Image 1 (cartoon, rainbow, N blue to C red):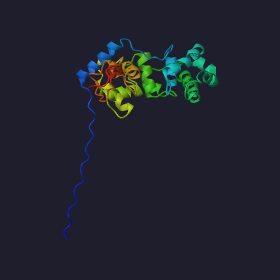
Image 2 (cartoon, rainbow, N blue to C red):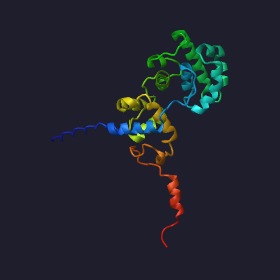
Image 3 (cartoon, rainbow, N blue to C red):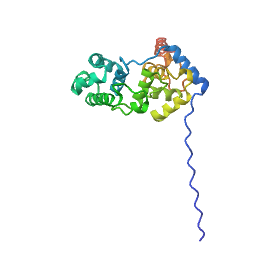
Length: 246
C-alpha cells in the first residue's frame, strides 16, 4: 500500500511590526506638542540631581503630587546622601509613610545613598549603567535623571508614554523597551531633548487611560486611535435639540 506523503507543515508567518506614523507625521506630532507646551519639565520637585534620583525612585506606583507632599519636608532636612544617612531608615520612613511601598522605598533610599557615598563621593553618576546599579533605580528612573538633571536625550517610557506611543502609532510596541527603542529611532533630532516630557504630560492630562480628551487634543488629526472620545459639549448640545420628527 502506497503511503500518502505527509504535507509539509505550513510556514509560520512572521508578525509584522505595527506601522509607525512616518517621518512627516512624526515631525508634525512633535511640533504640535512642542507648541502646546513650549517649556515642558518634570512635575516632581527636587533641589539637585540627588534629590531628583530619590524623588523619581519614590514615584514608582505613586503620583507626583503625593511624592511632592512627602519630599517637601524630607528634602529640607536631607538633600544630600550624607544627610539622608544621618536621618536613617526610620527617619526616612516617617517622612514617606503616605507613599505606597514606603517601607521598601525607605530601605532603597538609604541603600542608594550609602552606595553614592562609598562609590561616587556623594555625587550622582552621569551614566545609565552606574545609575541602574543604585538600589531602587531601574532603566526608567535612570533615563529620567539623565534627561532632567544632565540634559541627555533619553526617553523614560512609563504608562503614559507607552499608551500615547501605541495609540497614536508614533512608536508601537508590546513592552516599554520596544517602545523606547522605537522612539529612539523615529524622534527627530530637534525634539529629542523634550520628547519625554511632551509625551508624558500629554498622556497624563489629555490622552488619559479611560476617557482620552480627543476633542481637545492638538494631535487628534495625526493620531491613529480609532475609538476617539466625542466632545461631550457637542453631545450635550445635540441632546438639547430634542427628538427629531413630528
